[in-house]
Amino acid sequence: MLLPLSNASSSPEPQIKKPKTPPDFQRKDSFKSPKAFLAAHYLSLNQPRICLFLSVFSIQILLLVAFRSLPLSLHHRRQNFPSPFSTRHHQLLNQTVTTATTSPSTVKEESSCDFGKIFVYDLPSALNKELVSNCDELNPWSSSCAALSNDGFGPVATGISSVVPENLSPAWYWTDQFVTEILVHNRILNHKCRTQDPNNATAFYIPFYAGLAVGKSLFFNNSSAKERDFQCEMMLKWVQDQTYFQRNEGWDHFMTMGRISWDFRRSKDKDWGSSCIYKPGMRNITRLLIERNPWDYFDVGVPYPTGFHPRRDNDVVQWQDFVRNRNRKNLFCFAGAKRSKFNNDFRGLLSNHCRNESDSCQVVDCAGSKCSNGTSLILETFLDSAFCLQPRGDSFTRRSIFDCMIAGSIPVLFWKRSAYYQYEWFLPGEPESYSVFIDRNGVKNGTTSIRKVLESYSEDKIRRMREKVIEYIPKFVYARPQGGLETIKDAFDVAIDSVLRRFKEQEQPGYKWKRCNVLHLQISRSCGMGLVNLYRYCAASVSTPSLPRRINV
Image 1 (cartoon, rainbow, N blue to C red):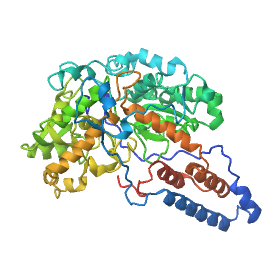
Image 2 (cartoon, rainbow, N blue to C red):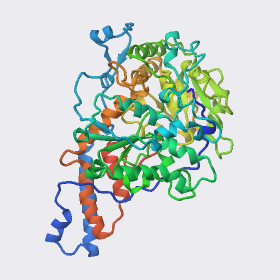
Image 3 (cartoon, rainbow, N blue to C red):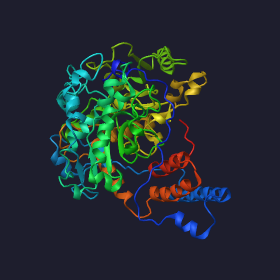
Image 4 (cartoon, rainbow, N blue to C red):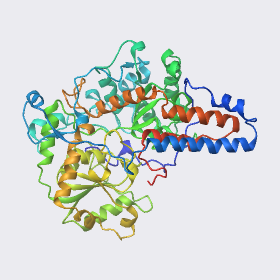
């Protein structure tokens, strides 16, 4: 991890409460109204008994829909068999590395835009370009201009050649964790499936820099709710006037929001962040965020940007080979700052636990600016360790998880929402194949020794877990070329392909969201039922079919 775990730009946020689910939503569809059908065959829908009957009936229908979509196994398994690069692929590389493997899902195919094309809106510059131009005003403590330089990748990492292979050092940058809006926008302008004709588009991209916009006001105590919502409301007013937004009420629109979901879910004026996601026009827009709300279908978790931005396929292959053959002298490590102001500080507990096992664990104390951009200390620690301890950050996720895996280290998690319910498109379907989960309560009460748990893994098991992490590295990186890599898909490619696939699926007859919407909306409007529980149920059954109905976080 090259960014600070605790610094001015990522100050501790208030205790996060589970946000209220967005209000009633609807979508244009070709289904006949269940209300009309029921009205023709039953008594008035306003009678309480009829409402109760219809409520139970609608839930039964939803259960049937969900269970039919579940896999036969209790555990959702996606097959990602490693496959050697083809001979043709090796010929494209400057250097052949025979040990390299990659998942079939990370290899680009020479096909056309099978899932459709993307139209990029030309928003008013105040919603993106001017925010970058006024980079001196984005941070109350210091200028953000360096962090946003080089198309958002930040300054080139200096003094890192002693840690990484010398010919790969130019692929490393001191990249800020909140710049996905810029990275995605620049890449999508050069995407092979971009179209200039909105009539040919399957998807519409809204290049609003929501994270930069709200970031200006997050740390000013005197900023009003109106100020924090200003740019979002401006964007929605502009977008809702567009013919193509009105056509499908935003269901085929998507955007990147470069911070965590909770920064855009303010319920009360006095609370943290903006209320952008709760604005009426946002309810059907798919949102790419570095941390999602697991109960919201329209939130999609994408990897935090790390410091590694490969320039070509060979950078990825060589890096995979480098971390695969790394001699790791530590069993595990922990990098982070204590949260001494918090009761039952779990980070502090892990730090002390690691210090007590100093012959097996390495600690990097990130208090103050010790882990700020410009140091390779954390990267080197991850490269030297078989496992890396990953508690939650200021929110459930943490950039350090991806910095850890980029270094070929196996993450040890203590909250399932830190990864398992976040990055479905980017991580293996079997959590145990690439990570270790330890019950934090056992660590807190002293009944669980992290060292003993990790020592119980055989060398062969550790090797296989590390290989799975290394296999997925392409999905964690944002490539440097604006056109992407030659044949390997990076995080951007995976995200865009999945968004286009999602939009195509939404247009299919009988799509689950339509079934949930049509039946429940008609009954709820007649009987006055709330949407919260069924909204969450529909979201879980569509976006993450393997997610337990009662989520243990």
